[in-house]
Image 1 (spheres, rainbow, N blue to C red):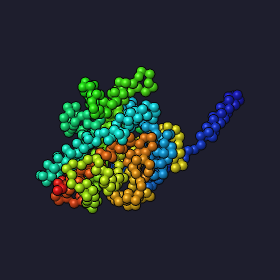
Image 2 (image 1 turned 180 degrees about the vertical axis):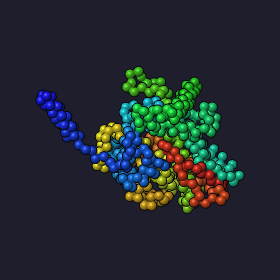
Image 3 (image 1 turned 120 degrees about the vertical axis):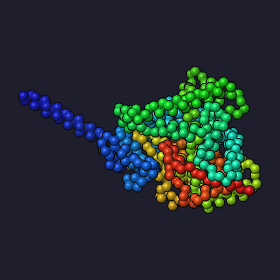
Image 4 (image 1 turned 135 degrees about the vertical axis):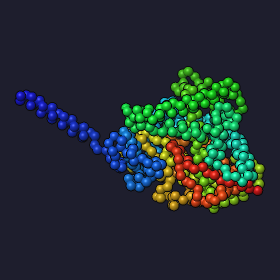
Length: 500
């Protein structure tokens, strides 16, 4: 009996010692402040409304670095310029991973894309190919004829509406313009003539693609969340959307191969990547596959169309709500350009106030107010808080761009605020991050900006814009909708009046 008691005491002493040693080796971490959590679900029950606005309100109480628990997934929300700079510049390397949700993994063919690819050699090679063949300044300039042609067609179409004095749905019109440009530049598809895609369903297809990639129960509750997603039809819808995109991209590839388009004078992006794939050697450390090509196609299709259309629509919305800014932009444009039948991209160098309008639009209405989530690849400290590995990081670009610490009258549309302020939107100034910053900066900035500038220049040069009968500036609805990108919920309808 004494031997048994001694053995139990020794065992107890050993266990206590192990616990004390473990505690000694693992000091308590200084985690960011967090709203009160519930068991298992964490803070999921507290998510409501538009996340970027909700997180902005909570940051006023809990500070610019907040910890959320979405089920079993830790998410840190960043809401200040200083904290964003630490994530995107100081600790960029350790913070540049991407979380792989169930929807994203399937839609991107296990991360064979640029936007959501895990950080590594494959991502670097894909990004390099996309930049060289699609996003470089030289390539962007080479596609100017497409942008100019599509804008000329838009002006002709709007002139018909102007002659009838009927309102135009600019939300749809500008979305179709962006789609026409991207589909021609990237895939060689004329949206009005193509048999591969229904122009009237592009918006619907894009919304479905964003919806299926959004986080689901499977991501927050590993092991049993899939049951909820299965019963809700999430997987069925994901399979359907993935098949639709795969079918479209495969038909585009087959059409290019069938017609031998790689020899044409003006090759599009499909021609370029197929040629790279054909010429790559067997022994190359990174081999471009059809899955990689389709993945990059989906990046260009989703990000290239949606974000440009959203920015143009918000810009026209703010100008319609602020007639003084509208008149100022039009007067400068018409005085600088003079009498012309058509606008070219050379005219963009002569206008200045419109560029301020676009910059202010990107500040107030970033197309992706929550930057694509990052994933910490190791332990890191942000603003003195300990952030563990495998933590999601959400930079709230919306909250930062409306922070009164950075901006005077932050919720007001004032393009003039940028006249004497060097702040730019290309990722070097962390109070304005519509395209992100660091290694994960959006590679399509130049393409997006010139598309937006040329379209708005045409709209403001050729037309005056009036509200439909019975409406005033205060009646313009500003409600938002969306998941990854945030658009105007109610269509923007204005009456074009041809300027003589």
